[in-house]
Image (cartoon, rainbow, N blue to C red; front, top):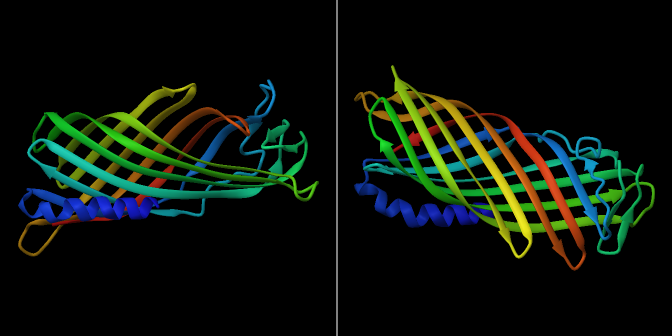
Length: 259
């Protein structure tokens, strides 16, 4: 779903990119670690379970495509990623959801997927070839898909599958010297809709080196970066209450092609 959304966005934007000063497509390889806790309850319990103790681990690596378009002072970027964190562990507190209960101290198999689709637009308040600083807005579609299965009581398992569209404010800063380009993007917001709350803070920092073709024009970049994504989601539905507070962070590398 996220890759199809990104492909559709690129298909709409790329035909108009011929008249734009710069456009690019990059492929990043991320390796994200996870930490935090989760509370799943049908009562008034406030005890949460640690994600690492439950067995959620660093993913095995994930490819994340990104499309960038720049014209005038505008910079539009769209990206998508989906990380998978699975493992075995122990729940520190009781989990209750949709009539299912996993007692504290139970051995569990934890499977968790986080999908992120980002669309950000910034405008350069300080434009320039060496230094640029911009502010803007954006939107994120966050997809949480979790399955926590008791290994002690067969058949007892808790499943979560939720999507959250979140508007965001964004800032972008860049520094270019001697073929190297340092870029930092910070985006986030806290929203509350009918009692359901979501707070996100997304930091993406990358250092890249320009690739130059025979004619001397920049045709792409090699880069190293770091991604940090913090999320706090609280919501109630007919099955129970969920409070998920975690952070995903880790390095990445990749290549970008310009046209």
